[in-house]
Image (tube, rainbow, N blue to C red; front, side):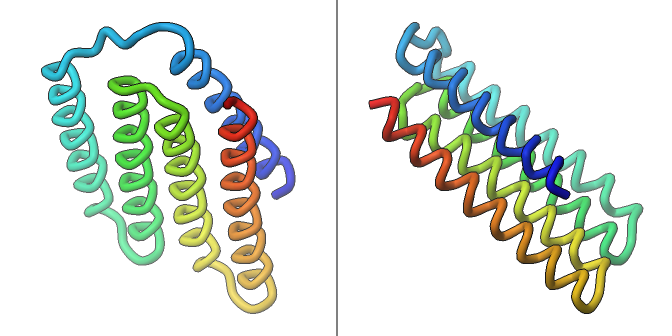
Length: 143
């Protein structure tokens, strides 16, 4: 669990730093049409992923749906950040990733019971809080 948390935090920070470079350095070459096409692609990918979840049942289906929704929300935040780069957009990407990871982790905790479920839920919530705090700190440090 600790290795997973460290990996998630490392991934989030790496993304934040790479997005800061993008936001500060070059101007975007994404047109409004590119943005609309990106939104349509993301929507199609979400519908496809959600349809795949239909073959599952129980908590596996809930996890699948949480993963699909999370990927959609992260992709939309990344698209927005690429279309109109800013410190806020970079933060929103980090926040979307943290939130998506939290929702999936919380669903996975539902497979457990008793103390294991309680511990799992607390770990997921703490990881989410740390990721949000790290994203805020990085945004403040960037400017």
